[in-house]
Amino acid sequence: MNSITMELVADKYIKLALEEDITSEDVSTNAVMPGYVKGTVDLIAKEEGIICGLEVYARVFTILDPATEVSFNVKDGDEVKKGDKLGNVTGDIRVLLSGERTALNYLQRMSGIASLTHKTAKLLEGTKITLLDTRKTSPCMRVFEKYAVTVGGGRNHRYNLSDGVLLKDNHIGAAGGVKEAVLAAKAYAPFVRKIEVETETLDEVREAVEAGADIIMLDNMDHDTMKLACEIIAGKAEIEISGNVTEENIARIRDLPVDYVSSGALTHSAPILDLSMKNLRRV
Image (tube, rainbow, N blue to C red; front, top):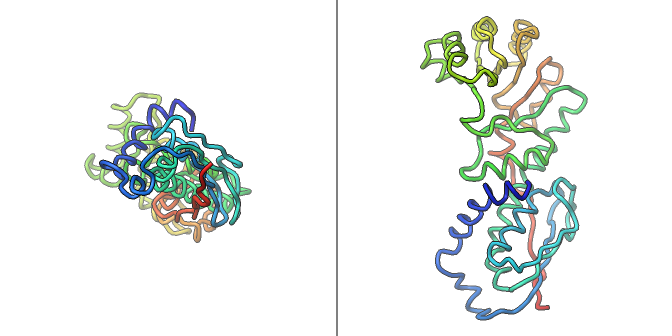
């Protein structure tokens, strides 16, 4: 996540998260620390995984006080182990205490997504299949969660509704059929946009091919049906598999000639990576 993305996109969400946690004051901190005292605290890994979101973690503290100093012994994408000291934060102890939970919430969530993505992507090693995320992200967390997917070794599907054409079952129903939906999209969308169609049956796959869809999504199909669908498509469109794709069952698609597999579980079901801020001391 570069500095431009941080300032233009991420900062407003980080500030909202801080406002959510500190509506008027941090009563606990102000009770024990009424004035400025400089201190430092360590960032510790409590389990093994892929670290992600260090810049966001640091930004929480520098928004509260630009003079805060944050240093790391690791970088986004590194594997960490239980007990590793990942870095430290130094500055006004009141800032360290007030920013702790918000900073850890981001870092744990993003690291959890990166860790799950990393595990899932490894199951596709040796194939030409690209692992994608979906729009099944937490509200106001998309910029962070989709970044975490890329750190873990996946790639992003469309970022939002303005980013690409994906005709799902209800779009198809609204248009009156697969063919009608594809033709309407071709007439409306800029020519530079690829048109993807979600299909649930082999008949819909045939319609999508005949209508000239660029990408055909095979949604919640069993292995034999997906194999037949690939034979129908036969290189006339790119193929994406979606629907109930998890770390446990992703191996079933390794032998299929598909281009992409998308998994909402990467973002909506990733457990956090357990991290902690410990050993706060005055300096």
